Structures are given as C-alpha cells and as structure tokens.
Length: 488
Image 1 (cartoon, rainbow, N blue to C red):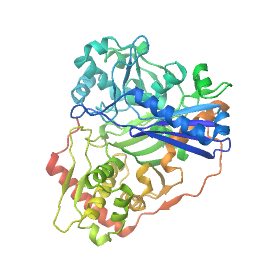
Image 2 (image 1 turned 180 degrees about the horizontal axis):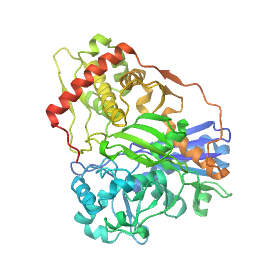
Image 3 (image 1 turned 120 degrees about the vertical axis):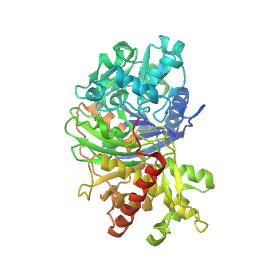
Image 4 (image 1 turned 30 degrees about the horizontal axis):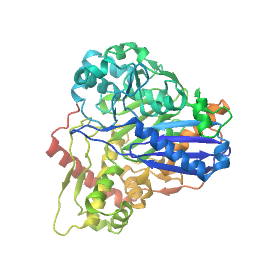
C-alpha cells in the first residue's frame, strides 16, 4: 500500500494506492493564500502540515486496514516556493510562493551577476522561480536572510516534517535556478550569486528513489509499527506526468489547475529560455521535460465564480449552452490576473475583459474566461514550437478538466486531441503514490497497470476556425494594451 501527498496552492490531496495501482481512497483539506501587499503571495508552512494531518486522519478513518499496510510515501507539491529555516530547523517567515511577483528587479540582477544562468539552468530568471525570491529577501529582510541556514521547497519542507531530513529531487530543484539541469546537481556559482552555498541546500535524489525513512515517532503516531519509506517524489507537474503515464519523449499533458501548464517529456535537456519555456529534469532518471506555464487558469474561473456568486460547475453549464454563433460575439478575456510567464514573463501584466455589451450575460462571461485561458495556453503551445495540428494526443488534468466545454475548447484551440482519464483531478497525488511504489520496489520505470478508459476530445474544425480568428484579436488586444510585451 502506498500513500501520495500532493501539496497544492489551494489545498492538500492525499491518495491511497494498492499494489495493483488502484486508488482506494482520497482525502483533501483546503488552504488559503495570504497577499499582504500587491504582487505578494505567501502561505504559512504550519498550515500545510495541519492540512496534511487532517487529511491523513480522514484516510485512516476511511480505510483503516489499507492505511495500516502503507509501506512508502510519495510527495508532490507546488513548485518554486521558498521556505527559510534557521539553524534549529525553525521556519523564519511565511513561504514565498510560485505566483509571487515581487522580485522582478532581482531577476535582472541575477542574470547580470551570472551570465551563464540560462545556459546552466535552461531557464531565464522569472519572479516566480526561487532564486530571485532569495535575492529580494537578502535586500529587504536582511536579518531574516542572515539567520537562514537552509532553503527548502514546499513539498521538501513536508519531507522535513516527515523524516527530519533535508532532501529534494531533480524535477522540483530544476525550478530554483540553482540546479545545473543537464548534470542534475547544484551549481556553486549560481548559489554564490544569491549569497548562498551548497550547505544551504538539501541533498538531491531522483524522484523514484528513497529519500529517507519516516521518523519513528510519526510512524507510531500514524499507526505504523513497520518501516515506512519516503520517496524523492516530484514537483506537482512532473508528478502529474507520472500520474497520467507521461514517461517517454513526446508524451505530455495539459493542466487546468490554479495555473495552466503544457508539459512535454523530452529525452534530453532541451532549453528554450528565449521563449520563456521551462526546461526541467523529469522525476525519473535520465529524462527531462519542457513546460509552458500561465499563472491563472482554473483560478480565473474561480475568480468569476466569486464575483458572480455562481458555482464553477454552473458557470461551465452556462458556457456550454452557448452556440458557436454566440461564442463568436463573446467578450475577449486576457487572463493575466496575476501576471504571466510563458511567453511574456511579466508579473505586472493585468487581465482585461474587452467588448462587453448590454446583451451579454453571465454565460458569455463564463465562456470568455474559459476561452481566454485556452488562448493563453495556445500562446504557450506555440512558444514550444507547435504551430499547427498535432496527431500526438495529450492528457488533460487539473480541476478545470472536469468541464467538458472547456476541454473541447482547449482541444480545438491547440488543434490537438486531449484525453481525460478518471484520474485527472488527482493526477499529482496519484503520481506521488506511484513514485513511492517505484522507490519501495527499487525500480525507475512505472510497472504496468490496467487503466480505466479515458474520454477523448478531438479538435472541431468549425470551432478551431473561430478560435484562431479570435486568437488573432486576442493578440492584437494584448499589443494595444501592453505594447510589444517585452519580457522582464
């Protein structure tokens, strides 16, 4: 029996997986984000641990016998966050999250201090990544920075709670801007540019390797008298790839989570930093991936749900009720509620709803938001070199994947078949549990398992024609509002 723990931005998900890779039970607990100033996004690590223990209690109550047989734990988590610990292992301040945009100036400083950054990391400096956050803290909170003995990523702080050991793995470490991604090791020069050295970093393992044993005290508290191992795990997107079986070059997925992601496995390190495309290590040895990221995806529909007092499922139903002829006249939505990464790399971008008329209703706005996110993902898809129809299908994951109308819109926009499996909403926690299985069994490839049938969405030619025409207007509107959109 294996336990997957996924630390998301809006909540924690836990999943119990049996030896046949069948999901026995899931549990979750919500989280909130604090925004004490514009562009700031923070969370308290103690809240993460409270959510994990709450969800674990749910699973233990649901499946007491299965819970008692857990042999390994896998971790997945939101990437790029900075958790600062002092010499006693105590948290010094709230974690600065992946969608925090305060460190734009520090990105320029970092690239100036280390001109080889893009060559080594395969990525350009972006405010969402970890290293610029530390430069900001060094400048604006020097007392905190001076007391920092260790920097951990969010899921790796959970590992610290579980095992008492500071360990990370390649996929999550790739997003720090401190990893030599091709060689899969910390780079001393990049750390030095931020006033750090390797002693501040956790040791590294592969995602499918054992990282440390669960602490005896916690094992006893959770009802286990036998050894339980904690796998390396993965950043949330690499874990989702394991969850949907994206292991080989060319395989990948689209995620409609809090953020929007297109993920594609590569057999070698293939950086494309000028397009603001990420090139990271995968969670499995000798595999890498490319990734385009937009900062607002399903969270944009959540924003409209809050404003309108309408559940997201109802908004999806309203959007689905619109015929194509009405969708052609919907407002255009630029989905930059929290800035953007791919392809614009600008945390200061703002959202825009253009073309509103008296005849528009909530259904038109719901569709506009879904379409705007789909067109933003199309920008990222094109930045990854995809400019026409694709025969290679992608998996579809994330909370937004529940919406049929959104899935169809996205398939037609990307001109790519999308398959949505029943695992889509829990892909990251499932991937974490599968990595736990691999680590406990000592293998670096996923054992075969029977998969439930997936629902496939094929591009619709008429819808594609409309979406491509509206994408041209979308890009023109962006140009009018933001000029050439120079990346920061």
